[in-house]
Amino acid sequence: MQSAIKVEHLDKMYKLYDHQRDRLRDSLGITKKKLYHEHYALRDVSMTVNQGETVGIIGTNGSGKSTILKIITGVLSPTSGNVEINGRISALLELGAGFNMEFTGIENIYLNGTMIGFSKEEIDAKLQDILDFADIGDFVYQKCKTYSSGMFVRLAFAVAINIDPEILIVDEALSVGDIFFQNKCYHKFEEFKKAGKTILFVSHDLSSISKYCDRVILLDRGKKIGEGAPKEIIDMYKKVLVHQLDSKPGDHAGSLNRGGMNGESSGEGLWRDKMVLNPSQDTYGNGLGEIVDFCCIDNSGQITNTIIKGDSFTIRVRTRFHAHIHQPIIAVSFKNRLGVEITGTNTMFEKVDTGTVEDGDELTATFTQDMNLQGGEYLISLGLVGYREGEFTVYNRMYDIFNISVISTKDTVGYYDMGMETTVEKSHP
Image (tube, rainbow, N blue to C red; front, side):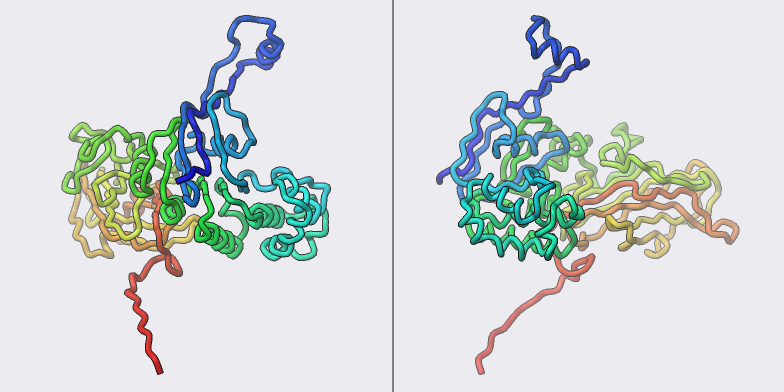
């Protein structure tokens, strides 16, 4: 199979200077002393994307994802290594790069088309498709400096995606505009895939990576550490996020036996230390009870912030008490990224008898179910409450303490999947 993109032993090194004068002295060559620190954004990265493949690149911030795309598209030059491209590229990187804000939308369409390598006649043939896709009306005849940010990205995206390339390179660009424009972008993306175009795709949206990609490459701190089927590499990425990549299945460092209860007392550290937490924590309560540990566990027993839609998962919450309390209530709730509460439950709703606790007692609640929420990001809040002398009392609440990323290859309408079985029968009159 012929390659569309071939990258061999790619390095990208930046010189970091402590002082601006050191940069000047180094550029003038007036000293033999090394005045900079070497920072490798990419280190010995090799990969091949075959024609007609859709390949995803994932990794944490700073792993080198955008850097490698910029080198492939010619925006950056590598320090060493080789890049071979077979086919005409259209890149959705920094939307609007190359636009002149003093030009009208129409003028920028022709400017960008010419930069990509199209003749005026070829751009004329594409113009109506671009205008229909951008859907910004008569603003296309106004200078771009008068556009809202939404109109600007719509036009930039329309120009990039309606040029007919052999290779499409996308960097987090499918989330621009409103929900309707995003839907239009994904439809266009699917058209490219069905037409057998080559696609190189960088995204933090693991659902999109899982749904669209034939193969996934995992970068970490500038190095390629994995390549393979989407599910396999996403599982590796989940471990990278919590610094547990070296742990093997069953290791206490990265996994938690569902029957086990007290990770702290057995010398394994806190469960929460293996999670990605919200740095801006909003917690409060009267302190008579406290949430001392918590985690999310996938169906393999791994502590993680990422769950596959349809899989069973568990949220575990460990609490400690500092007073005589009757029937404490342990709660968990899910919000969407807009802060709207989607679902939740607690030990009282579930009719679980928590009994009476005394100073020093601990309770651990385990909430287990199948993940039926649609693919996306959700914020998890935890609570420890109850009724004390007839009054509702908050012992400890943790708002939006961590997130759960739901990875899905099939979403339905709304927030959760009803799990319907659907059949269609054909009949003849």
